[in-house]
Image (cartoon, rainbow, N blue to C red; front, side, top):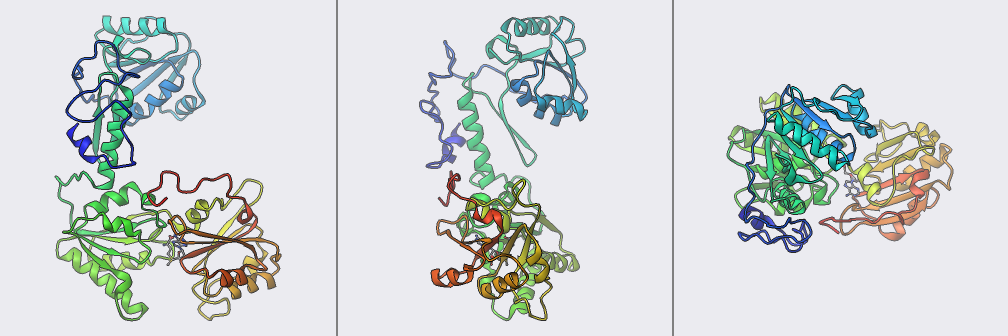
Length: 449
Ligand SMILES: C[S@@+](CC[C@H](N)C(=O)[O-])C[C@H]1O[C@@H](n2cnc3c(N)ncnc32)[C@H](O)[C@@H]1O
């Protein structure tokens, strides 16, 4: 509990009212049972259910919620129920569980190591617990936990750890503490550095900018870094969370020309890892989407440095989404194409078939396109894409400073100049670019919002 109270942050996952997470237990009137003991009387244990028969009586949403973890633990799961949800049916048809569609009958627990009674009929649940007790099988009773012989903790799995929290039947409290602990681990507020991390490099996609949009794995590795080599578009708030002992190299400030700068970045990664450090190369979006990630991987591998790649939430999909624009929509677009605008259509280095792009009817997402937007719009118009095709430009998507410019292909270039749109920006062209964002509330629960 002391850990949980230490990791609470304002505005994040508050523990519900009346459930202070201090050393004192404050009963929650909504969930607490009468005669609340001052500590949870149950013995928390980890069961090895691998290959062992577990019988779940009931196939509704309560059962469905429990089945995922049972399957993940390798249990031999048998569901007995008159009816099951489509998801439970799917688990059965994919061979993850066995289902018997009928009423529960005494004897169904034969051979079971563990049982869960989760029908919506109290008398059936009571009968299951009674049979389990007779057979000395621990049994959870979902409708009235205290009438069973086992209770399910609020659990979470994180990087090889399993967390379990019991709170004397106060389910909201155990879930809140579990969530807070999980978030603390994910964000690095609580660090699990008992096992040293091997030297090497992790190429981590940091997402489009909102610090909440990095992956859980990316955040976990970042929290273990000795050295971080960060891109210009890597979410800056993530760097602010690093401890003072972590060395940060701002790759955007590495001098020399483009090629030399890349070589200097590669060297920083290799030298850091060879000096025994765990190096995180933190990039914007996904490391492999116009991010030169593969060049960095090749350089490290050639130098004998182990590399882990952590994919990221890439901007050509997530930035439009943050502005309420889906890159596909059923019956509207059957393709979306992501194009780099770092060279002009007529540049000898261009690998893009602009006339072919102009003939497409789906969604076109242009990256790094602000500087040459006039040339791209002209190429598409000349290739036959109608001038009235919706075109939306999103600058600094997912950040507090996000700007959205709605135009069409015929006017987008002039509007970009008139409105002073600057990189980083994404240009979305196609029918979905005209979808209204009114139905979407941006930045709900976002650190950047
Ligand atoms: C060198 S690319 C890197 C892309 C990155 N690897 C990814 O997966 O998103 C940089 C371009 O990504 C786009 N971009 C990245 N983050 C963005 C954001 N938050 N808002 C708008 N555009 C963004 C812009 O087109 C920018 O010029």
